[in-house]
Length: 213
Length: 73
Image (tube, rainbow over all chains, first blue to last red; front, side, top):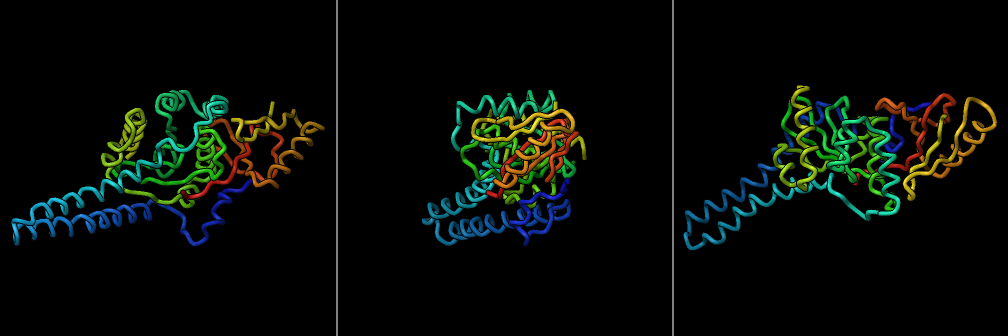
């Protein structure tokens, strides 16, 4: 007997299934959220400077906040791909061989090089890491970062990725619904927060998404 | 030959192997059900980049993988 929906969806019954329209709406909300954080600090900085030039250091702090808060949001988004938890050096080679067995030649090479799995889905291109995935929508410069993982910390890193990959392949909508939406924004904001060795995978995913648009 | 594999702390463990229906398949079914009882989720990997969740062990599957549940972080 086969089932289409992820059983993990039972843990989040209040969430509506993710679709492209919902993702676009989230994207707009994230932009508003970012603007909502940034503008007041900029306005406060400018106002302070105009009203009391002696308060310029405070104004600079206000401008810094306007810059730092969106950076922290982007950092949180990029974190879904970062390496996390113990490396389990003994079991990892076995797990890595198994993960490689699930991939075609090109994604396998990319995974070996960057530690990330590039997977084409119906919603777009996915880049999957140990603690989640980033979705690149077709023809869009915006990315959506999803935080999701296996709760068992004893699993080696490649097994954690394989868990996410199999869940994604089984039910992409369910995968995106179960995951927590960590960030949405311009791809460049996330890219520069990624460790350098991961960036080729990010670039490849972005190029694939753009060409599909 | 079809295999039943569990992803675990060792990297992965092969639990069963079978060829068509028979004693080996019955043992594999038993092992599969026992793992589901433990909370694992069965995934039939189609070897073409797609996968299907299964609650019964398909006799014609090439590779069935047992994974643990995932959750939003």
